[in-house]
Structures are given as C-alpha cells and as structure tokens.
Image: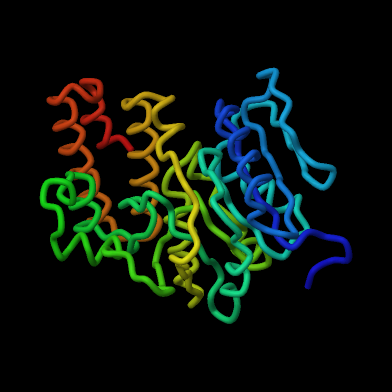
Length: 288
C-alpha cells in the first residue's frame, strides 16, 4: 500500500564513474516521463567528481564514501524509497517512452517486469544458467553459430511480440515489487562489485514460486558495457568469473562448480591467445 504522498515508483540508479551517462539518463527521464508518479534515488559510489546532478525535490542523493558495489547500492536505494515499486535503471539507460503499464504486470505471482531493451541482445533475457548453458554462452557459441535452436531457446529469440515469462531478466532495466525485493533481502552483497547478483536474485525468485515478465511493447535504450569497458577486460573477467563461481557454488552441486571453473579457465585461455586478457587469468579460475 502506498504511503500518503509517496511516489509510486522509485527509480534506483547507481553511479560509479558514469556521471555523463547519469546526466543523459536524467535528461531522458525529463523528456519522456517514464513514470508519472516517480522519483529518483541516485546512489553515488564515486563521489567527489564535481558534477551536480539535476535532481528534483522528491529525489534522493545518497553519496557513499567508497564503492560499495552495485547490489548493496541498489539495496540501499530500495530501503530509502517508500514507493511500492522499484525500477532498477543502469546509468547507461535512456528512457524512450512511458513505462507506467509495467506496474500493472507486477501482481499475483509476478514479482518483477521489464521492458524490452533496444537494441535487444543476448544479455537481457535469458534462462537461469546450467553448466551446459553457461559453457555455450561463455565460449561464444551463440556468435559462432547464430540462429541455432539452443541459443534461441536460452535467450528467448526471436523476441515474442506479446508479454512472456522470463527466468532471469537483467537488472539493467527492471521493475520490482519493493515489498518482495525487501522480503528477499534484495541483492546478495557477496556479489560485489557487480555481475551475477541479478542471476542469484532470480534463482531465489523462482525458488519462492514467483515469476518475472517481459513487456516487449515498452522499450528503453541501453549503451551496454559502460562500466565493464572502464575496468578493462582483465579486471572485468576477474570480477565476472569470481561471481560466476560464487553463483554456482550457492545454487548448484560441487561437481558443477568444478565444471564451471574448467569452462572459465578454457574460455579465458582462448581470450588470452587472442590478446584480450592477461596471461595469468585463466589459471586464477581454479582459485575462485
């Protein structure tokens, strides 16, 4: 139930050296009014940049002393808002139209809903990973063999024209019931600084018997990979790989964890041979 005077949707955004992207996001929100009754909660993990964000009187600015990570920052924003719905918005999103109808989707056993990201990509909507599905993805098979049945099933391709259930939508553009997000205790803070926190969240959503839904008639634009590019490939794959192992250790068997480490090691070795990551990263997979 909405508190008197509280916004209907809290738009939670995390800044980490993405000031230009946050300014563009805020500008697109003014132009397109994604939610008529919404407010921004901006959690700043890299303060001291000299940028003054043009926030409104109902918006919240939460600067942190250091980078607390994406998941913990979203949790902080969720607790600070009193809106019944949370829209998690990556800073490199741009709103292209109203998203108010998403709130109608979040009811019954549907705990979360998402618009279609433009351009649609493999990262947005996917099924929860198994060892085989993760190996297919991490070893680049969808790109090497486009249009294959396994990838189309795993990534919901081609995108249906009507609302469809999604096992694991990305947290880049996601509306969530605040009550249920807090009931789940939000993102697991172990998945820092980022990656796989949303996969873990939806594994727990499925365990509760709840669902998520994509509404393809609504879209947002996304410049994917902004933070990953700023980190560099080796640092990105270091964080990504550790959190991947952490996810499989939490939700799968011990043999599955060993198998995933082998996939990571082999995939990182291939990337090293192509000059994309440092020489020792493939061997670090076994220490994660």
